[in-house]
Length: 151
Image 1 (cartoon, one colour):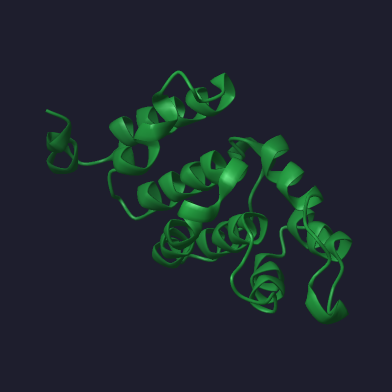
Image 2: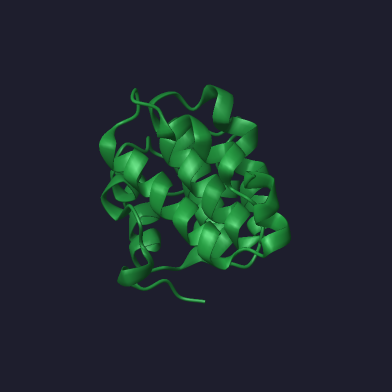
C-alpha cells in the first residue's frame, strides 16, 4: 500500500532522520540511495537496505525499518523493532515512540503506554501534538473493549 502525503503525520522529522544517516556499512549503499528509496516509497527495498546495516541499528535506521515494516503490512514487527531500540534512541526516541504508536494502532491496540511519555511538558510541542492526534485517532477507531482501559 503506497503512502500518500496526506497520511504523513510528521514528515519533516522523518526525513530529517534520513539526512542524519551515516553511509551504510561496507559501501553497500549510500544514505542518498536510502533517502531516495524512502521518498519513492519503495518500502520493500528500504527494508532490505536496513537489513543490510550491521546490528545494532542506530535510531535512524530503526525508524526507517519500522516505517517500512508497517507499510508492508507487518505492524507487529515494526513495533518489535522500535521497542527493542527505544532505550538507546537518544534524541530520536520521541519519533520512535510515535512510530510505535502508529504500529500499535495498526494492530488495533491501545498506543497509550508508548505515547504517554510524550505528553509531558519536557517534550517538544510538535511531538506532544502528534501524540495527542494519534491518541485521538485511537479513541475514534478502537473498539469499546479496548478503550475500557482508559476508565
